[in-house]
Image (tube, rainbow, N blue to C red):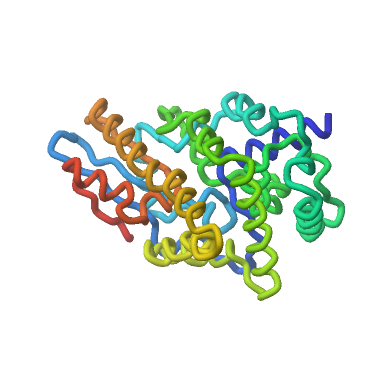
Length: 312
C-alpha cells in the first residue's frame, strides 16, 4: 500500500509539472508583478486573461499577485493545461509505467543507474531507485528535478487554482488532454530517453557542485514578473543539451514540448474564446508558453486578439 500511495502521489505531481525547490526564507508574499495578460477582441463581450505559472507553489509563487487575484476572482471559467482533478490524475498512472518487461535499471544500464541512485541519495539519504523500477525512463527524467518538492506534499499552483475554482463554483476545463500531453514523451525512443535522463542528472550534479540552484533562480525570475528573465531561466536547461553532443535531440525536445504546443494551445484558447465570448476566462498555463517567442501571445495576436500586459 505504501508503494502504491508513493507512486500515485509522484505521478500526480509529475502530471502537474511541479518543479523542485528548497524552502525560501523571507520570501516576498507574492511576485512583484504578475505574468498576466488581458485578452480582448472585437467579438469578445468581456476580457479574458492569460496567466503564466511555473507549476509549483513555494512562496512567493504559490500566492497570486493582487492583479492576478482580481482577474482570477472575476473569471467565470478557469482553465489549466490538463485537467487537475483527482480522477484524471489517477487515470494517468499507467501512462508512466513501463510496458517492455524491463526494469528501469535494465533499460538505462549499470553506470547511469548508479548515478541515479547517487542523486536520489543526495535528495534524501533514505531514497534509492527501488520505487521507480517500473517507471519509464522519460518519467524519471521529469521527476528527478522536482522530487524534493514532491516529498513535501505541496500542490503546485495550477492544482490550487483548479481546487479554488471548483470550490467557488466556477467552471473548470483544460486546453489539452492528459493523454495527449504525455504522448509527447513517447515520441522519444529509449536511447533518446536515456540521454535526456543522463543530461538531467549531469545538470543537477554540475549545478550542485557550482553552488547553484536552477529552480531557485527560476523562482527569483518569476517573482520579478519580468517575462524576459523567466524566459532566460527556462531556456537554460534545454540550451545545455542543444549546445552539447546532442544538439538535434535538444532542438527536437524543445520543438515537441514547447514550440508545437504553443500553436495547439493557442488554438484551444481561441476555440474557448469563440465558443463563449460573453464569459471571462482565466487561462493558467506554464509561463514558458507565454513568455517564449513566438509563443502563445504572438499566435493569439495573429488571430486578431489584443494582448495587453497587466503589471499592477
